[in-house]
Image 1 (cartoon, rainbow, N blue to C red):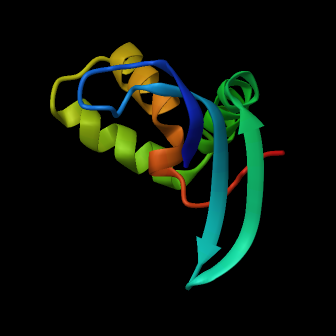
Image 2 (image 1 turned 180 degrees about the horizontal axis):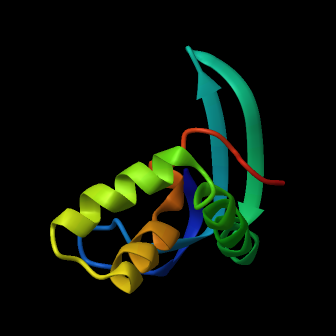
Length: 94
């Protein structure tokens, strides 16, 4: 959940960046974990989260599906790195 000052607006809002973020891990309606990040901390977290995500079967399956659409490896990984928290339901790294 982004909060605070809008740093960079991207049309339609999905790629916009904010000063701070709260990341919640919820399992079957129960809060498992909550992390607070500044923008820079959140960007570093996403890099670590993506590296861990790449080791999972979920990543391999998703990437195989996206490759069928003719997208390049580089484009897929760039997109998934940017939006990794949309594709992972658990906090994989600290």
